[in-house]
Length: 95
Image (cartoon, rainbow, N blue to C red; front, side):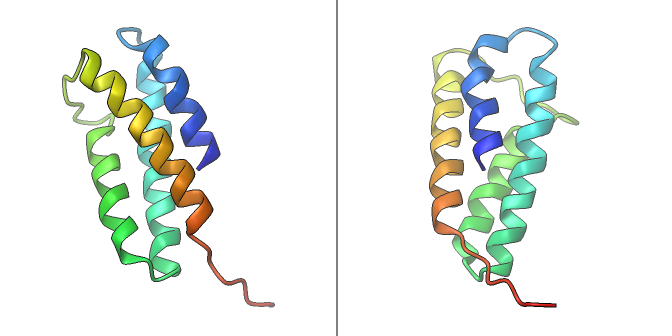
């Protein structure tokens, strides 16, 4: 979650640049990973949130968002990743 949040904090500086595509890949992939951990932790509500993040930041069929709302979405998503990282806990079972 911290890596995704860091990428989203840097994202507004890279908007409009080709490097923003890398940010989209990072965020989309890490959103799916966090959703998987939420599934394992049986915290179903996070799955919906991170599935939506993965769709909005998907690099394959990107949405043409721009402007202040898109910049604000980067910040909201970063905070969401941080909160989820603090709240989603998966039990580890010894091998």
